[in-house]
Amino acid sequence: MSEMNPFKIAQAQLDEAASILGLDEGTHQTLRRPMRELWVNLPVRMDDGNVKSFQGFRVQYNDARGPTKGGIRFHPDETVDTVRALAAWMTWKTAVVDIPLGGGKGGIICDPKSMSQGELERLSRQYIRQVGRIVGLEKDCPAPDVYTTPQIMAWMMDEYYWQKGHNEFGMITGKPIPLGGSQGRGDATARGGVYTVREACARLGIDASSTSYAIQGFGNAGQFAATLHREILGGGKLVAVSDSRGGVYSADGLDPDAIVKHKLDSGSVAGFPGTTEISNEKLLELDVDVLYPAALENVITGDNASAIQAKISCELANGPTTPEADRILHDKGVFVIPDFLANAGGVTVSYFEMVQDSYNYFWDAETVYERLNQKMTKAFNDVFEMRERYESKNIHMRTAAYLVSVQRVAEAMKLRGWT
Ligand code: NAD
Image 1 (cartoon, rainbow, N blue to C red):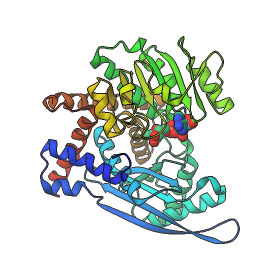
Image 2: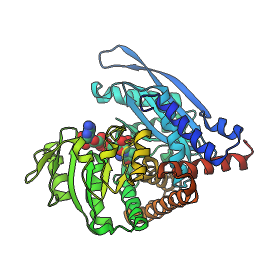
Image 3: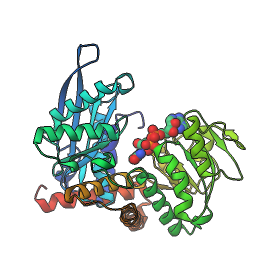
Image 4: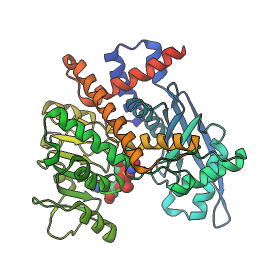
């Protein structure tokens, strides 16, 4: 299944939820495909004077609950089916945290690492010249994603301004703070994930303040998880972290602030003093209370799932666990907080950014944290209670999260008279 087309995986996950919920055929079939998508051709003048034509997409998967929302990816291997799958998952993610938005995604087939800043700016502006007609605060709101940055968001927002003749900061999120960005966006994904871990500990009878934890992947999400775990849970012992260059372990615990500094100074966690080396594979199998997969997809598979010893796996990364592994983890009692719930803090604060932009009045960081906390706490508990409701079917948290989301989107479609 993990080798399959990602859109087929997304459809299979929906099919399972539809069957458990007993969705009618019309609703189910409407949810199996995007509401609309735009394919665009983007001619861009390169630094050598030649014009290169890039292919781009914008998929608006479902907007029954509100304007679609989702990132724009710049990637050489981008495909429309990847964008469709990610747009479907955004639909479930916005629904599980109950923000009034739908799901969308965009992508451009390009290799940003081989492009100059000038070429990236011209490509970003050209994308908005093409998709500007279908995006906007009330239609579809993009955001940064793989290889797209706050600077790219600023160029896109500016291009939209030239098209429309007025500023509309809320047409895109993840912008720099001086251009309508939100406080608290940087650490929102990790923060939201740690809030769900706190709730999981409460439900499972684990003392959150004395949890041991390990983090695979030490980028934006992983680094903030290292420090926020202790800050939010009031304690905890970080025993291992890793990145693409290797991992480090200490049974006595690592100082989260010092390891973040080491990573920023040296570019890797490898070689952090007073630690032993650990491979990325072994890190996943450590006997810890909380494991944060925060790097890549498909790292917990049918091959290693039975070796996972963590009590809780909080999926900050998208898609770290294959469907086969999900079942194994569930059967051996590993409690998985599924990706589109665990990492929904990012889109939630993006939604707060849209709200602040639309009334042109900005909140301080404490207000953002408090509102994020409320959203994540409720989302976790809605999913946990759904799991209990379907206990007789022995479902795991990922299926429960699908049930919550699909039910909400289906209800919105029915109320609107679509189905
Ligand atoms: P990032 O690029 O900042 O960091 C990725 C980290 O993973 C880097 O430290 C990299 O060295 C490490 N890595 C790469 N290959 C690895 C390997 N084989 N083993 C271990 N580590 C490896 O990315 P990020 O923004 O932190 O995102 C991480 C994951 O979280 C992705 O799956 C992303 O889709 C997901 N996510 C992030 C956000 C967000 O707001 N940042 C929101 C939702 C989901």
